[in-house]
Length: 484
Image (cartoon, rainbow, N blue to C red):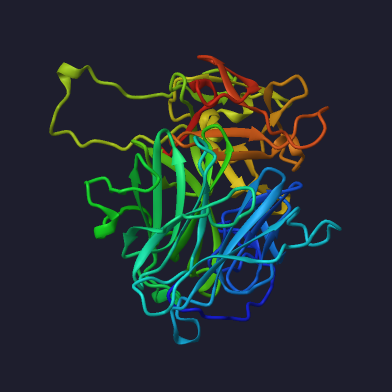
């Protein structure tokens, strides 16, 4: 971050009628990558504090780290958590004499008897005169080599890379810092499919609704670069492919973090400099992370609506297993059509035309050709009071115009029940996958303890939906939402 601005944020609970952001009190600036500890989620921000969430959806203050400063990052290595942060620098006190420090903890839970941060160790610095500012650090533990890397820096000069010892958090003896980018700050490093990615925050920060922050990316085959964008521009000469910019009434995304939930299920975290629906405050953002041609791009939070739910396996539509009701139509032989005769708009078949013939109790579901029929149209609505998961609330899924709800059963099947009552088997977790499709997962399965994290809506054959273990590598687990 270029300029440190401290604000007193009122901790109030905010529930929007349409859930467009994290709920609770998700107010933070320069958040670290989200870390999980003992079933809870944590992120740390500028100033020393941070946020805690029981479920990944509702956030509140309470995370603790000493040292103040700015823009921390946190990572679990073996059985401990390593935190890296910038002290001074970034224009704090008018200078750029920054320091990067690391410290360890056994737990992130401030209520645990094991909660104790180690003494901070300096691993990098800037003297305020050189063309560099030691602030905004991030961590990468290379999964191919086990080596630990730290990038840091701001617009005041270069982005630098150093190597740390993953056992001590200290700088590797004899390591010489390397300049790898310019014209960005708040960088993050990640590795995927043989590529190293450098994500940097570009634009202006700390100006609320006028902030122009956005996140760009370059990639390299070597962690030390050079990092090029999608058209071959080197990030050391200002390159960078867009990952996320302002949108959805939120301005200034910055400080990227990546969290892998499951194979093919990833989210990115950031802060938005200003959320127009939350008084223009700086808030935590969690969005699906997609991968297109091996480039990361932010997805959009699923918000609900009325859709065809379409199987990726065959393209058939999820529907009630009821009799097909034909629509009446005045038809003309195509060779007898008068081109001068006015055309008429044909209305869709109405719910009231067919609903009286449906069974009154449970109705099974199947998949078939989509025909714009009432038994194929599903209204999906967030249920924020039911909690959520990392990046979204649970949803109810009902036939449009009715309370008939999609429901998981104890024998790992799906059916519809006459009314939505809010039971866990009627609540659905909807996550966009890295390829842009979705998985649809019941919150709980009757007779099984705890939250369901394994079974998803699954097309076991072209026309047979069921519940089965999630598998990203086959299309049976994947669905699309089409608005017709």
